[in-house]
Amino acid sequence: MIGRYFLASRQFEVMKRCTIFSQIANFCRKVLGKEEGDESMTTQEPVHTATQRSAGPRRTLSRDQHPISRKEISENALKVLYRLNKGGYDAYLVGGGVRDILLGRTPKDFDIATNATPEQIKALFSNCRLIGRRFRLAHIVFGRDVIEVATFRGHHHQVNNSRHVSAQSDEGMLLRDNVYGTIEEDAERRDFTVNALYYSAKDFTLHDFEGGIDDLAERKLELIGDPETRYREDPVRMLRAVRFAAKLDMHISPRSAAPIKELASLLQDIPAARLFEETLKLFLAGDGLATYKLLREYGLFQQLFPQVATLFTPHGNSPFEQFIEHALTDTDTRVREEKRVTPAFLYAALLWGSVEARARVLENESGLPWHDAFMLAINEVLDAQVRIIAVPRRFTTDVRDIWALQQRLTRRQGRHPERAMEHPKFRAAFDFLLLRNRVERGLGELAGWWERYVESNPDVRPQLQREATRGGDRPQADKPQGEGEKRSSNSRNRRRPRRRKPKAAE
Ligand code: ATP
Ligand code: MG
Image (cartoon, rainbow, N blue to C red; front, side, top):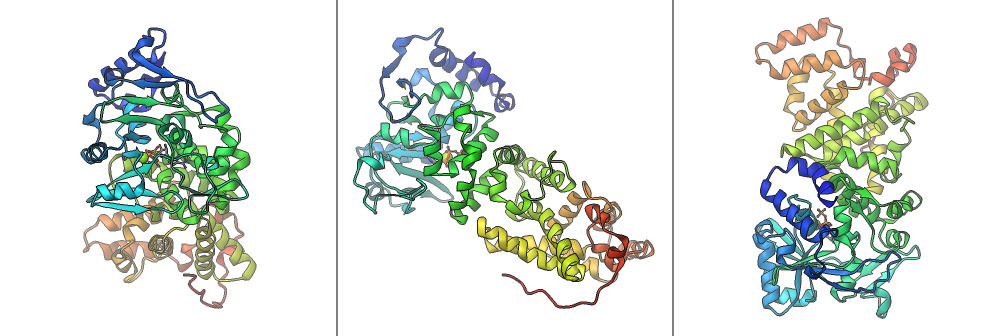
């Protein structure tokens, strides 16, 4: 049964390496297949947890009972583990590193947990940086590779609630969590059972304190402890649940899924800078489309992008919703092909519908010319969004350029096309136009023209421009089509006097 779960996974279908198959098969047979299981092979101790759900017995699996081998762990992570052990400390690989190896995936990064305090870690490594206030962590830096080392966390309620070690908001959110404890306590403080598996490079044992091995086999994401309390402590765990479900092709257990919709609004208390980091993991890690769909289902996307959510339709298939899905599908493909992806293009795509909708309102209500209404809408939409998610300015600048270029690309006379092509964001804007053309009506001729123009020899380009002019290229053509076509022809063709130039918001 266990083997079936593993083999059914999407990741496993992709993973053709038979060595891994045999490793997992052995692992399942020896450890997970309780029906054939040899109880004597695992050490079982009762573990007392504060969780409502019984965590199950602690299991310690010896080297031959699990498929993790040092070959799958980065050299740098091993160096850190060995150095900590040599210094007399306990140290374990934990979290995604262990979980992903057990699932036959290549871990994104390697996290280490130890009983050494941050200061003790710093004393051992010259390449160590201590970071974080909320969670103090050590980063061991090897060039571009960073190994994150965390001291075992304890229960904050057991120790004096000194302002320096632990603090909680009125809503139950943990503002600081720097109480250190034992490995068992550390396991309880982690988010999901499958993230609370510990591998020792000293004796090659694998430790499961919360039933993570069984849950991994069932492809089940189970929050450790009472879900509502744990989401209140850190609402980002709701985003993590969805992210892991999409990325690992797992399901969120009913008890862990139940409170999410109701608690989704707690995301409003999360600092905007942290949410920016989270959105990169949600949308730019290769499973953006699946993650987006789950985020919507659980009402989490609506908290992150309220302006976008107001435009959602019951069946989720309006042109702009299709546009978002196309953008995420393309992004996922690019990630898989190891091509560069940029947050600017993603944010430009996610917010495009909101900008167009806002521009239309401004045009109709305030009588601004379309161009001015559009530029004002760009400012308003971005200003509102960065209050929730702190998209750094270097990216919002690019988002503006991609959007503004949509207008410039409609001007095909004179030196306009040549100048547009010289713009550093031209390629992104051109791709954006092609993407729009997949859902917006009335863009086919323009998109096709630009494709020919970009590919053609410079000698041929003036001819293409003449053809565009003959085809009736008018300044008003920069108005969005598609939904915009629903406007009255009167409104579409009326030229209004220019009133004022909008001020840049940033
Ligand atoms: P990945 O790195 O593949 O995204 P991960 O599980 O390793 O997944 P990290 O953000 O690297 O995620 O965190 C490492 C580990 O730290 C997690 O596996 C989990 O045990 C613990 N952890 C991270 N964030 C939280 C949180 N918000 N609450 C509780 N535990 C957490
Ligand atoms: Mg990790």
